[in-house]
Length: 347
Image 1 (cartoon, rainbow, N blue to C red):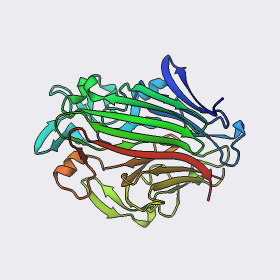
Image 2 (cartoon, rainbow, N blue to C red):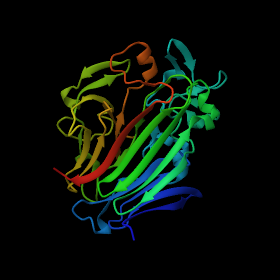
Image 3 (cartoon, rainbow, N blue to C red):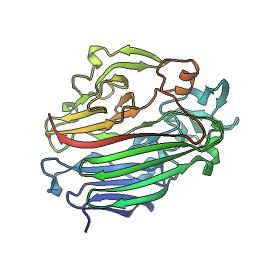
């Protein structure tokens, strides 16, 4: 019998995909029907890999799946495409043309308001984080278990209201002894050019065990600058500089960190929990030039989010802001990226 397995799960009447490590008890739960969100992740302590009681909850599942439907950007690993962050008023420019998301009669609302206004269109974090994805392939053997899901915008005409650029996206999650890997692919399936940005939005639990508290955990992001709204880049002030790990304070470090130094050719940020002797490590391919830090109010979690671009990326590109991060694919072209989440002993 293979070490790793993939199985169908069920919660709140919804179909899930469950990736399992039979040796350690590590597990990832995904909901393809709502954004292909990996909403729960449990990994073994690196020094106690064979003891199920030493499993660590890295991503905390919501009280119910209805919470993901209500606010899809607030749980698990939301996938932010074709733009992360906000697009104020849903208005943007591309190739000299002006666009507005949604129908002319459709209100465009910011985060925190759209879910209480039926029929509204949101101006943040794109379209795919609550659409149904299709499971296309599953794999399980002695090295990993994986699932690949896809979404084709041509099957969802609403997303083309104000965004007339067809695309196909794929997201493959793999659970192995090293942790969880996410590979993301974008393909231009239209006849014209496809502009986009992308970000992943993982929520990491604090602390990483029964000892300590969130405020004892340390954050590290190897960034020399921060983006400000409007496309301005500033040096990181000492009180916000995470190149040297700093204690977590809810709300203190909110923002986009950029000009990242790489470790072995990859982005690497981490959360260090000295009380439990562990670190949650986020790695990402070098085509993510920024990491957003955000702590949801009232929750013992922090987000370390790899993004390829800042908020309002289409308009920043139209204004020719340097290093704006907008990707433009010609017909038939593809773009790829990857990120990894793992545990290691605190250093």
